[in-house]
Amino acid sequence: MKVEVVDEIASNEDTVSETLAPAPDGEWAAPAAGVALPAPGPRVVPPLSPPPGGRWTPGAVEPAGAPPPPAPRIAPPPPAAPRARRWGLPLALLGALLLVFVAVATWIPTDRYGIAPGSARAVEPRVDLSAKTFRSKGQILFVTVGIPKLSVLGRIVGAIDPDVEVKTAREVFGDQTQEQNQVANLKLMSYSKETAAYVALKLLGYDVSLTGGGPVIQSMCLQFKDENDPKSACVRASPADAVLDPGDAIVAVDGHPVVLPGDIAPLLERKKPGDKVVVTIVPKGSSDRKDVTVPLTDSGDGRTIIGFVPVNGGVHDDVGYKLPVTVNVSTGEISGPSAGLAFTLTLLDELTPGDLTGGKKVAATGTINLDGSVGDIGGLRQKTVAVKEAGASYFLVPKAQEQTAIDEAEGSSLKVIGVSTVAEALQALERIGGDVSGLPKPPTA
Image (cartoon, rainbow, N blue to C red; front, side, top):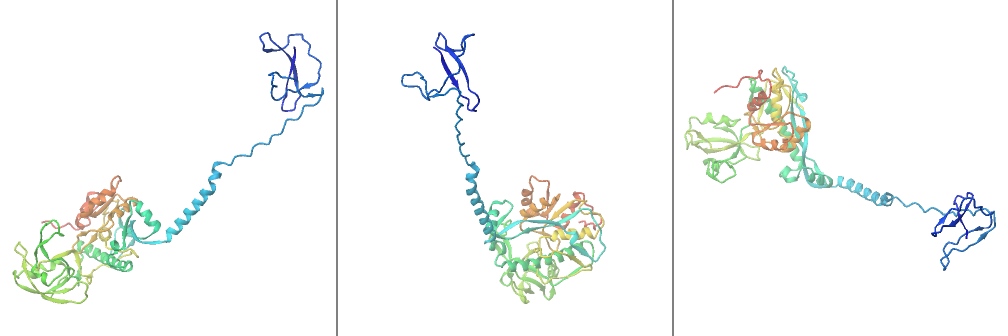
C-alpha cells in the first residue's frame, strides 16, 4: 500500500509531495528507484488528531491544483512591562517625599549646636605693622571652629559625622545668649591681639608697658587634699579668704598699682606673716573699686604672701597697653582668644630677618598670656581636622592638650608639638629647621 504525506510550508510556498512506502520492519522509507510517482490528484489533509481506531484516514479533500490556504495570522502577545517601569511610580514618590523631608528638615531649627571643623588660615596677610617687616617663605596659620545652630537635618548629620560634636546651648554658651557670647568673644579676640603684640615686642626688646589690669583670683586655697587635683577638698585656706573671693581682681596693694601677679611680691618684701595690707580690688561682676584690709600669711618657703592662686595669665579687662609699634591684625567677625599664640609667632617672624618656620606651613593654637604662657583652648579635635585639611606639616598646641591633637592626627603626616610658653614654641620651630637667629638670645641662668 502506498501512502502520500503532505508537508505544508507555513510560508505559502509550493507544496512538495513524495511517495513513501513502509519498510519491511514497519518504518517508512523512500520509494525504490524507478518507481513512478502517481499523477497529481486531490490533496489529502490529515485530521488534527487520529481517529479512535488509531489509524490516520483521509480527511477533507481539496480539488487538485487548488492553492494552499494562507497560514493563520496569530497576533503576537503584548510585550510585558519592564520591571523597572512597574517600580517607577513608587520610586518617584519615594524620591519626592525624600526631597520634601530634606527641604523641610533643613529649615526646621533645633535647640542644639554643632562644634565643627573650621579653617586654618595664614596670619601674615592680615597683619599691618608700622615698623620694618621681613618676608618669609613659610606660613603660620591660625585655626578656627564653626559653631552653627543645627537644623533637624544638621542634627542628624552631626550625630553621624565623627568630626562634629553636638552640644546644648548651655554647654556652648553657659549662662549667656548666643549674641552675648559673640560680643564677649569678640572682646577676647581684641585682648588676644593686644597681648600678642605686647609679648612679641617685649621679647624683641621694645620699650613696652601696661596700665590698669590686675591679677584675677582663681582660688583662695593654699593646700588641696590632692595636690594634683585642684578640684579636691581644700585642707588649708588663706586667712584672706574672709575678704577676698574668686573672680575678684587685685588692682593695688597699699596704694601701689598692680598689673600682673609678679608685681605683688616686691611690695611685700618687708612684711611679715600676720601683718595687714590694704588691697584694692574690683569685685567679680562689678566695675567699682573697693578697699579691703587683708592679713598676710607664710608661703611655706619663707616668703610673705596674700595667699591666693591667680587665674593663669588672667588680668582685669581694663588693662591698657603702651606699645611703640602700631599693630593691626584684621580678623573681621572671627572671635575668641585661641589665636594668641599664632599671632605672637607671626609678629616675631615679621619683625625679624630669617624664616621662623624654615619655609614650612605651621599651624598654631593656644591663648597667649602677658607672661608669655600658653593657655588651653576649646574645640582642639575639630581644629586638628581643619589643620590636616589645610595641609600643614606641624601643629603647635597647648602642652596640656597635646594628646587630644595627637590622637586626631594619627594616620596623617601632621606632626603635633605641645608647648607651654612662647619660648618653648620658638625652640620647637628651631628644631624643625626654623631660623631664630634674628631673635634675642634668652637669658641664661
